[in-house]
Amino acid sequence: MIAGIALGPSLLSQLPPEVGETLFPAEITPMLTALGQVSLVLFLFFVGYELNLGLLRGRSRSTLTVATAAFAVPMVAGAGTALLFHGTLEKLGMPEDVSARSILFMAVALSITAVPVLIVVVRENGLAGTVAGVIAVSAAGLIDVVGWAVLLGTIMESGDGPGMSLPLRLVLLVVTIVVMVWPARLLLRRFMRSPGVSSSARLAVLIAFAFAAAWVTSALGLHVIFGALLAGVVTPREPDGTLNPDLVRSLDGIGSLLLPFFFVVSGRSVSVGALDGTAISVLVGVTVLAVVTKVGSGTLAARMCRLDNRTSMTIGVLLSTRGLTELIALNAGLQAGLLSGPLYTVLVLMAIATTLLTQPLLVLVQRLWPNEDRVTDAGQAGVRGDSGQPVAAGRPKP
Image 1 (cartoon, helix red, strand yellow):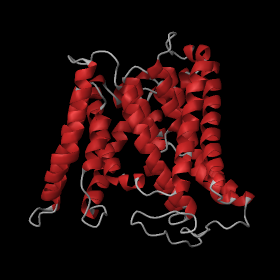
Image 2 (tube, one colour; image 1 turned 90 degrees about the vertical axis):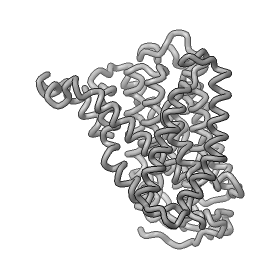
Image 3 (tube, rainbow, N blue to C red; image 1 turned 45 degrees about the vertical axis):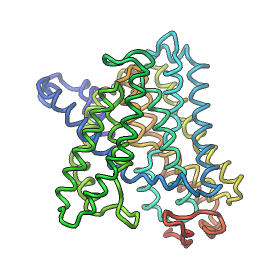
Image 4 (spheres, rainbow, N blue to C red; image 1 turned 90 degrees about the horizontal axis):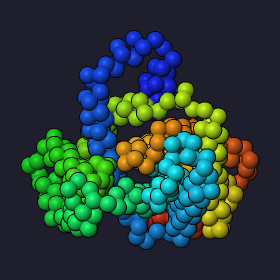
């Protein structure tokens, strides 16, 4: 993300004009945009495929409580900030007549948790299988489901779309969802579980399915991310409920190759050097608000569920991770006209700051409560894994 910003006007504007023209001539801009969209569709398809909707069924009280608090409190704080400090945000290009969509988008921007980044943080800190790790990942999955649904309603314009009225687009969207959830999913399941089908054929069909879904949502006046995400969600898993390892490996490899193009395209809309004193003040305020609301709400909700201080604080800190998911949402808001250039820059920098703060805050939690058990019995905490069995508790690596 930082490299993508550096390749935009934030750094190139400080260099001679010839450098930027040589690196990014005008002729390649459409190709960069196309590759960025391709990478975005594939990444969101992968995210949807990894998203376990089983979290919506039979989740523990702790997970539901934490997810509700960690989503609702930042939402209220974001909406309140957009209303109370609208005059300040106007200086960053926010419209004078604030709309409900703009307020709702600001609320969602503070509520997002990046599940892919969170999983990596949990694994690298030895928290996988612990109460803190399981509750944080499960709650983040629930937050993702609700967050994308709210974002869908925010991005969809209230007026007429591309040649279609809003009621017609809503009807077509419902029809699309029904077709993908039922007949399309059944056909994919039969195809993917056929013994004579090769891994490459499965990958080709699924990629085509993802792009078809993305095209449909785009034609309905929505962003391509919603179709790609839905395609991943409805893609059937293995008979035992696990992910197809060949598919995961292939999608991860393709994403590693193409996703940097999305960072470059997004970074070209970020201009750090253009931020004035007002923008920097807003950046500091929004970053503090984003961290405090996420960490605070997650921690207090975990304490209400009788988890110890260290576990509760760890959950709150983990849920403050935003990363790429936030950047995708902000990019969609920018394209929908809900964000101005300076405000987009501020929120992108906030996403980077909150992600970078996760590791130092985890270290701080360990030092503040060094003698408390990092893990309690997961069965007693009411936390269960995807299989429905209690998650094994054990002391993670220091």
